[in-house]
Structures are given as C-alpha cells and as structure tokens.
Amino acid sequence: MTDRFDEVEAIIGYKFKNKDHLMIALTHRSYIHECQLDRVSYERYEYLGDAILEFIVSRELFKKYPEKTEGELTKLRASLVCEYTLSQIVKLLGLGDYIFLGQGEDKSGGRMRSSILCDIFESILGAIYLDGGLNPAGRYVKRHLLSDSEVVKESAFFDAKTSLQEYIQAKGQKVSYKIVNETGPAHNKTYTAVCFIDKTEYECGEAGSKKLAEQIAAHKTMIKLGVS
Image (cartoon, rainbow, N blue to C red; front, side, top):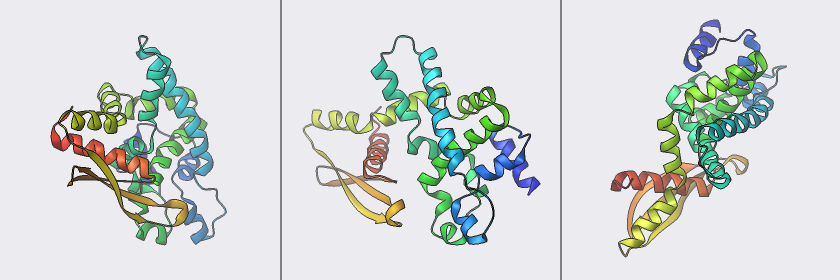
C-alpha cells in the first residue's frame, strides 16, 4: 500500500503528511460497498476540489490575461475545468491504475471512464488542500493544468464545434453529429457521437454527456483536417 501511495505522490508532485487523505481521494464508492468498508468515498473530496479548482483557475487566468473580458475569461475557464480536459490529464498521468474500484466497476471500464477520471483530478486536489493548504493545491493545478500549451490547446477544444462549423460552411458544406451509442447505467451513461461532413463520417467522441461527446468529435475532426 505504501509503495502505491509513493508512486501516486511522485506522479502528482506532492507528498502527503496524512496518507489517509490520499486513500480517500482514490476510493470509489463501488469499492466501499463491495468490500463493506467503514470508509468514505472520494465524493466529498471531489466536491471540495471542484470549488477550489474553480477558484484557482479563475485567479490564475485573471492574473495571466489582464486584457481579456469577463466573458472571455469565463469561456476559457470552462474549457479548462470541463470533464474532457481533466479526464485526459488523469489518463495521461496514469492515475486510473491507482483507483480503488469494485470489481464490477473495474470490469465495466471504470478506470478509463471520463466521469470517474475527472472526479479523481478534483478529489486529489481536495485532498492536497486538506493536507497542505491552498499553496500546494495551487501548485498542483498549475503544474498539471495551467501550462501555456495546455491553456492554448484547451481553448481551441472549447471552440471546436463553432470553429469547425465556420470552416465547413465557408467551403459550402454541412457539418452534423449523430449519437451512435449509449452505454452504462442510467445514472452514469457514456455517449458516442460521430461527426459528419455532408454524408461522410469523420471522427467520433465519447463522454458522459451528448454535448461533450460532440465537442470531442469536432475537435478530433479538426485535427484530422489540419484546421487550427
């Protein structure tokens, strides 16, 4: 168990004084129910982390972009704290391998489910805040989310559907989306959307909402077409 936590701390760049915070941050409710443990899941930490994340991102964008309007800052913040962005970061860090999941949730692909991975980013943030305060929490967010390249990339992602629409319309073509698959229980569905240009199928996207799945499909289609 100690080695497991040491590995996570090395990945996220923070060493916990109280390892219980990290244990809670990585524990899904399915694991608690299956093992009948007297322990809370990560949900309370995720709730706290969500609020802290919005504050830290708002503060850093406010300082970094003094020329941007309130509307522009709000739009950029939304692109950075969305499910897709946070889940991709956790996926790239490989933190899904360290989540305590019930066997059923694990077998159904929980370690790669975007909604769970997004929650883990926020629950770890909440755990860092409880263990060390706002300064290390801010360093965690800046290190993994707020690098210059990530801000630019995720801003482009947020505008993907609009940008693709304008690009395709200028060429006299039509872009559309179709939800082709739904998986998972009613409370935690995953949707697959496909992007079409005229009648030609392009890229697909998967997410916990239809809107986000379409956004991912649009973003991947722009990359395929070489549209910046």
